[in-house]
Amino acid sequence: MSEPAPAPSGRALNEGDTASDFELPSDDGNPVKLSDQRGHWVVVYFYPQDDTPGCTAEACSFRDSYEDFTDVGATVIGISGDSVEKHVAFKEKHHLPFTLLSDADGSLRKQ
Image 1 (cartoon, rainbow, N blue to C red):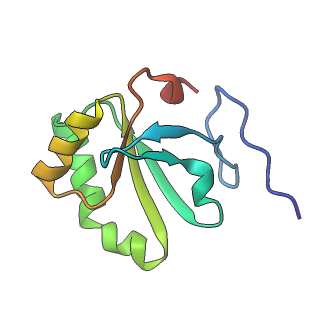
Image 2 (image 1 turned 30 degrees about the horizontal axis):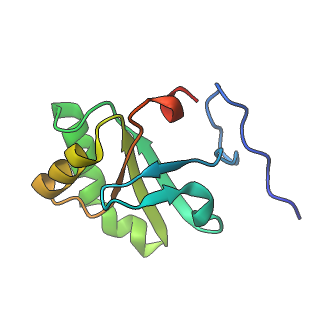
């Protein structure tokens, strides 16, 4: 059985769609490639900016529910346009246990 085709660029994903592959730098300095996660549940969430009230609340909500995700084998990844350096500080400040990726040029968010 073949995998579903990625959703066309420029449209929202629907349940059952496969996200297009991407590779972005992470807060630990290593690149993360979505296709390396194939066969595993991955929760990817996008947010505008580190340390804004709404984005901090969202990140802390994922932090507080993190064990629920990992208990079912899911990986959580947050993505914004902030730099890797800003992600490191944000992650440390709020004790975030999951990976943050930098989409500095906004190309993935536009896709």
